[in-house]
Image (cartoon, rainbow, N blue to C red; front, side, top):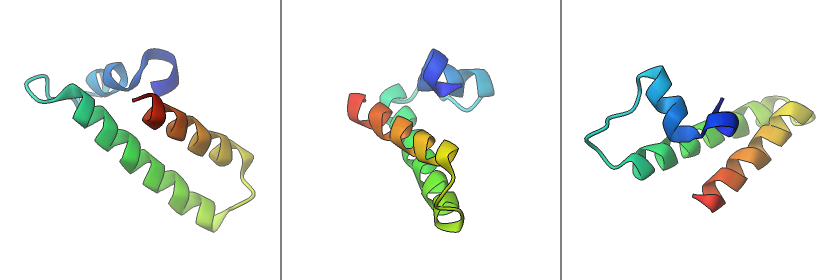
Length: 65
């Protein structure tokens, strides 16, 4: 999970990280994509508390960047 080990570690474990590229930019792009998916799901089910918490968590990770 991104929260426990960090976004870069998560992407590396999934095999989605290009070590020759800008790691911070890749992590940021992943978080924005994740934020978009969460927002889309919240449009369908706006009362989902787990998704609301996930959205706040992603926002915090983007701000901490």
